[in-house]
Image 1 (cartoon, rainbow, N blue to C red):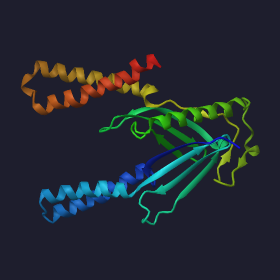
Image 2 (cartoon, one colour):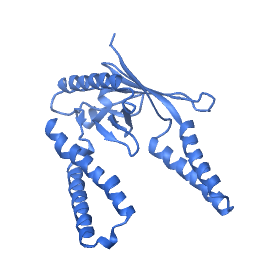
Image 3 (cartoon, one colour):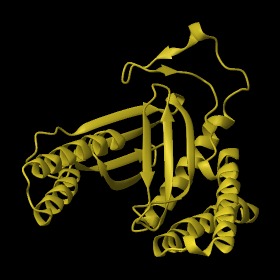
Image 4 (cartoon, rainbow, N blue to C red):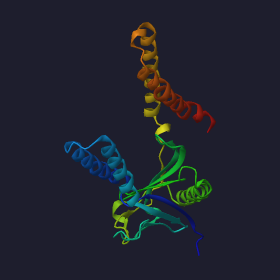
Length: 249
């Protein structure tokens, strides 16, 4: 019997990006309707924010991912059991994993968190995080075992991929199983685009500061706030992640 490693976290029931887009459209539609009806701001803004957070909360689900030497399983179960959302189960073999990506990121209003993305041959992508640090120990254990399984799988494969007509169609997920090695893709901070963005951001900040030095009449609170609270901290974080942190890895 294969030993299993499991991690449980919260995410949206459906695709996260699509869910946020739909929720935003619904909340903004309600807000615009209230504006057209000449409703006061003390009512309009709370309704918008309440709908945003309320609908996202309703769409939240428990994602339980389990791996062993044979396959990967994910169960998605709605947090609010009274909603008509059935529990979904997905199952893939290791031969159906196409790539994975792991690293750290930072939300706009959240602390830095670790993530692991798993891409399959049918285009489905699983995203697993350490729940903004709250589930760090379990995440590290899961990630370590996941990478160990990837290394074992790749180690037992020859350098040659099988011919297209020798591919196997999985009856469980209707995806092609191949003997291609599983690829580790770089995170955004490891790409040339992150380096270019950081350099351009630094140049932009230098130009703004130089302009303000020679044109002090343009110095306003909003300008200083954007520089000190948004642009400069953002540049420092990007520089650390893209250049300094890279040298220590």
